[in-house]
Image 1 (tube, rainbow over the protein chains, first blue to last red):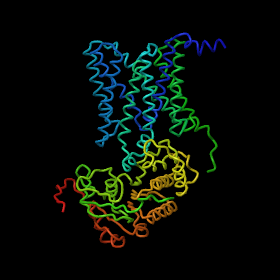
Image 2 (image 1 turned 180 degrees about the vertical axis):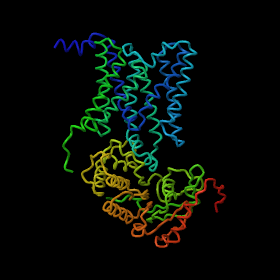
Image 3 (image 1 turned 90 degrees about the vertical axis):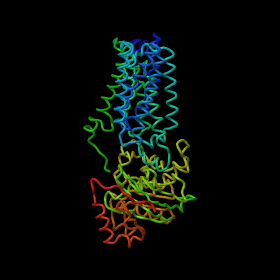
Image 4 (image 1 turned 30 degrees about the vertical axis):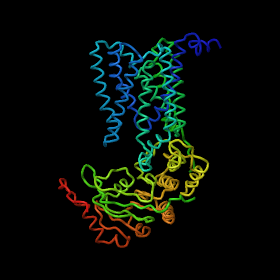
Length: 291
Length: 254
């Protein structure tokens, strides 16, 4: 019993920074879980990755103006990320170009701009923080930010859920009934950017994408109903946060990558064993229904 | 199933309608009226602008010239059955939810789908011959079954104006028969119907009116008078007249 306690719970009971990291993971999971599912279903899996790079110039400008101030860099990243997302979304809405292409084009421009600004600033060390984060250094203001973003994004998602689902399945339908599909699309993009920025300090934007996409990508192997996919990916994201933090604590490994690698392990298991299309499952299933 | 108060009386006026892709007209200077309660087949060779006409009426395409006027129908109160390729069939959604989309005009983005609407959804699924499959993911259905689901959604929409884009493509005979029976029922309820079709035999049997389109109007009226050998061969020759560098069209609206 003592062993289990010291293995599974003691790190969180003993250390405040571990508790805060765990709460940050919970908040990130609640926000990122559903967003990741919709990104995958809209075939925008790589857009999260693109956006995580696109926020760089915003963070760099804030860094140039205010020094290493997390609130300023968060706001800067959000503004630039939002601009890139809305521009790319508009290009897709108004021209025949597909979303993956317009996002790729604009995030590359934004990234190059960011790199140029960073080198103008003369130091790249601190800015690596933005990309890779430091979840064990999460302080109370950062925690409040992450929790607030998770709450906002859940509420907005609940409000746009029906429209967003229809917009994903059959965009022509909303146009025919004048349901305003663009509204849902753009609100969703805002949520994507918000949740990436939420990961800024804790996991870093690059790792935050991992928590967004890996559980969602795993979910498809376990269920074929969107509501269950969302529950699954939120639950798995949080579980990965918990397990990853423990692994990183006991083995003295960096925490962000430990969390994401745990999610990676879940993904591999899902690909192999998931009841819907898993590799081994298909091999093992020798029986089938009569009709 | 109860008929919507405004289920009848919708008509569509096309006034010099031109729809173009990159300047090349897909529908060219089209004039005419789909009368309230009419049931019209839109026929013509591939690339004749049939689907583009439907999309312009729905409002998915903006006319390059002219306009579409909808009379006796609220904008948005149109049931549009898309080609299956426009729907993401891999999306993890149960049949019941897809059919319930048809309730959008009443439920909007937020309102609950109440018991009455749930009953309508179940009835519609039953009426298209898929009773009991409400919980099935749409990704597991066959093409024919999925077409029945889309028809069920149209039923729930209960709209005065129904546009069907190639509703019987790749559909077996029995399914086709069932779905045509539904179309006749809608016609009987006074709804205005347009369907893009390829099977001329089917059009002659079931559709009183036809519009033969080949970018421009070739003939429009009673099916027997429209689907004559002369008209059909003229439609074919118009469709074949492809020119890599066509001159600019100078037709003035009259």
